[in-house]
Image 1 (cartoon, rainbow, N blue to C red):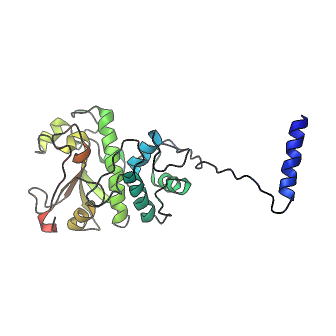
Image 2 (tube, rainbow, N blue to C red):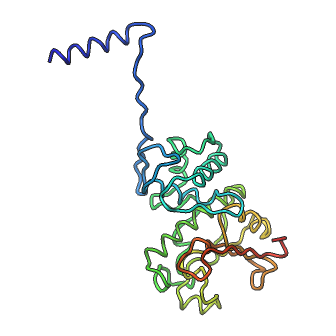
Length: 257
């Protein structure tokens, strides 16, 4: 008890004396109660873990031109650069360190089920009217996870286009749905890894050109057979389950791509 009393006296003297040294405690990022994910520490290069992986999903749409953000739970230079672009795009201090202000912006952008502001799962599930995530080469959970990553890339694209909503005309397709619409045998749609887009406020060419800055390794638009009325975007480069893994293919000749 005497020790505790002494501590209180010392603390009181420290507060009372001008110029006295006072220890500063840096608080972790503010807690955020929602149904999705809450970060509890500041993240920077060298960090690793599930919190880094969750961050990478949300900044996947902010890589370098023609680049991607690897969702691997390791805070690399690549991740820091994507965080800086995200921060700059939303008017935050662009230091590449994910702290309270960065997480606050992410919380403001995401719904309780982790989907971003302008998109819902129902926009990207089975495109032939049945709904759901089954019937493709992956498990429903893996297919849905791919769709979530695509949505966060699309959110970055929407912001680039002035926060004007895009219409998804086709997302995930089961094998049966893909055959019905004449899709490629190894279409990225089968993996929940693609979206066909139109816009009421931006031309298809503007959309296709902008997509090059937001982590899409597959882009097909006007000038590519069968794509005169929409733009297809996908993440084939990251999709290790497909025959197109590791590749980047862009083709929209009428748009100079």
